[in-house]
Image (cartoon, rainbow, N blue to C red):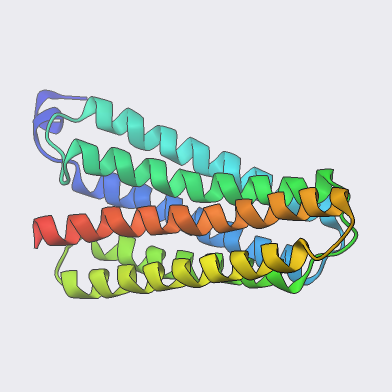
Length: 209
């Protein structure tokens, strides 16, 4: 990298990488919904999500590499780092939830898993559009509105988790309780991470508008 490239902000590089990363996260969310709605060919579907998680890791690593090589960036270094980390966390929790479905040998998913997966998907779709908006920051209010929607969806996920746990503990099957509770919590944690991304994006929209 030449001196000019080191000094001048490489705007497109970071925004391109973030858009690539959110596209992978979004695709993984669709694959997760497909898994829980049609719980067949489970191993193959989980492998696809796992592969997408690895792709997300590669892009996240590219972001950090670019961050280390660029002196002046279009966003604060901390903002870039927080956004990359939070986006990567979403797909990590989706992968971990799907792996538990496979490794725990559950026979079928239930309405709570389906609802949580759909909330993840809805959240990620909002985040993907919000990430596209930070490239120019021409419409910060639209970014904030999408972030508010993600926060609302996360609150819904909290409610779903509470109902799921309450229903679960009516069972006397201790092993089933342990397995399902773990899966529910990983799915809900993915929505928490969506909210983390929304908070970073909201901060960016406010700071740079």
